[in-house]
Image (cartoon, rainbow, N blue to C red):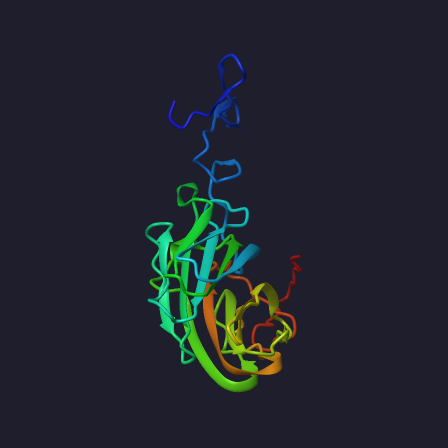
Length: 275
């Protein structure tokens, strides 16, 4: 039987293929794939705003390769991997997983930034490896669940803005679905920041390279078509950049109410609060 599930019970292989009631009898319903945690008989339905499931980050100095483990991951999860290097070598190269192509930027501060996004499946492995050529580098992985993998684009980066000599970073307007903002700052005195209302802080990496602290911070928000505000820093930074990354979802055709947002807060005759 194709896709038959058999389990070793210690002495023999036993048929454990899931079954479904067809109206008159129980019939085999073989699973389609192993999703990294369980056998699934169908892919989960994408949501309009994919859910954040975890993140990991690291700071290295003088290493050639940086391997950063992924948080617990399941098939079709969206992986966002970010690498920022100090510009003393070539741009960071993504060595694994194979096939994921990063978008690369050289910032006005001289920093090199690379962003890659891909849908995960077991053959992709449990970690991400960047070649930073011996530079000082900050890396970060974030996992989002229930995104629409049919909407994979050539680049996940919607836009980038750079700033200098400021303690406030205005965010660009959000797009549809889930929006991830990644901020990079160069400063010798930054110790904290505040995201605007409606943006949820995610992974953060602070680190000191030489005389300056190079910080990589992320936060996300549902798409609403307008700017959610700005990041407030507790010190003036010499330079900064904000990258907007889109995590595509799939609309169910219903109106969306984003609390406190006059653009996205559209109520119909019936309102359902989803927690």
